Length: 477
Ligand SMILES: Cc1cc2nc3c(=O)[nH]c(=O)nc-3n(C[C@H](O)[C@H](O)[C@H](O)COP(=O)(O)OP(=O)(O)OC[C@H]3O[C@@H](n4cnc5c(N)ncnc54)[C@H](O)[C@@H]3O)c2cc1C
Ligand SMILES: CC(C)=CCC/C(C)=C/CC/C(C)=C/CSC[C@H](N)C(=O)O
Image 1: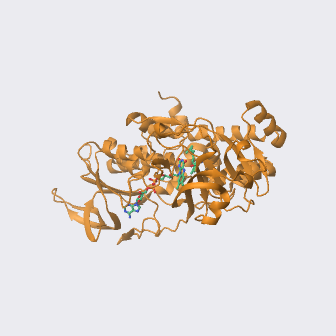
Image 2: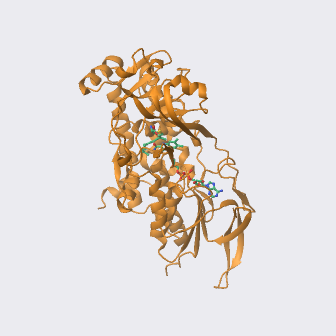
Image 3: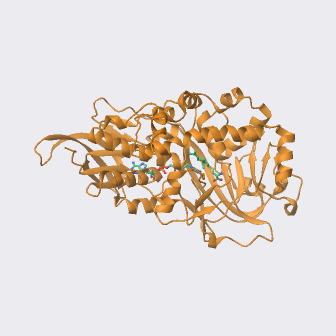
């Protein structure tokens, strides 16, 4: 006889991880289970916007890859629409000059790339394609309802030992072994890691490949702001949003109306100054577990749940409407400066990681082409920019606004990813960020955790950690 569904499930964190977990839990467990979603800040988490002179711009997670199929599916199923990112010309600055500059002519670009780096850029494209091809297997596994009990097992099922090796060595080592030149790694790969993850090529090889894929064509975003996906998922999941901060979780034994003593989880949370609690059959934690970001304690667990110490990279996003001082990067005056983004090399010694022109999240808010060289620029830096630094970067500016983030893990391979199963019915999603942090990674982790919770609840051992899934599913429709 199939087991009755759980009465109550708690999800902690209403970012893309938590809201998509609630959505998938509803799909698996059905309409009768009560799902509570706890959020101490804003729905969306690291998907958030900042307003510049009445228009909203993405301040956190901003671009989505065309092959990010969960995000694509959400947008389609939730009645949202996608906007294609219009890629302008990019340059790379090394502290003295622009070591690479894109041209608006495709053929000139190709000649430039080959002239400067031989066939490295084509080889890089093929390397990323190969990783993505294997990565895409996850969608087939999840559509057949298979789940994994650890991040390592999930990665192994996709790319075998190669993916685990990438996780355990630096991108630099991975690409050096694959024969890429020091010049290409320094002038092309490192600046891409700096703009995307605020780190060097010492990040792990897997997140390095994810980061390289984020320069593909076809990147998109959600019309109105990426965080809309979270609020729509929350609505569609018919969960109950509790705007409170979870402070601890404790295992408790309770006698349910069946008369049997049952192990449950007590979630204790604060709303303002008031402390409340509730009991749950299953709990999913969808926020990084460290003191600075979530500060959740696990009380009286046997065996005890380890403390998590994953260090997250501090990044500041600054949005400025103004006229760039292009002479920092090149001797050309603003009228002749046609780059819309400048990335930097690791040794550039500049106080920014990158700077680029951005468009508002609503297409109708897009300004007409600028006649005076004024644009809204997004700057990523390790620290908050001082007024003096802003004045160095801009000839003049009207408005500046910033947001500080503990943005993504500080990658330091070999990576030991945290467990997904923290306790019998207590699951942790955000550990997937140790492999790579991206919206799609959180959605994949959410789908996996919902499937895992469902199969473990129902004792479907054959749906968890199956080996050779790729071969097994080859013959299935
Ligand atoms: C500046 C920046 C740029 C990025 N760019 C991209 C990009 O272009 N493309 C891309 O794919 N990804 C990008 N990312 C990464 C992406 O944003 C994240 O990987 C993703 O949003 C993480 O979602 P999440 O739901 O797992 O975590 P979060 O969004 O962090 O959600 C966790 C939620 O839990 C809540 N919470 C924490 N503790 C508690 C508690 N005790 N009680 C209740 N609630 C709690 C938090 O308030 C938060 O809302 C970027 C990230 C940053 C910071
Ligand atoms: C998960 C897979 C296969 C692909 C995701 C690729 C992707 C979109 C990664 C984003 C990585 C990231 C953290 C980017 C941050 S900066 C983004 C953008 N350049 C900006 O300027 O905001």
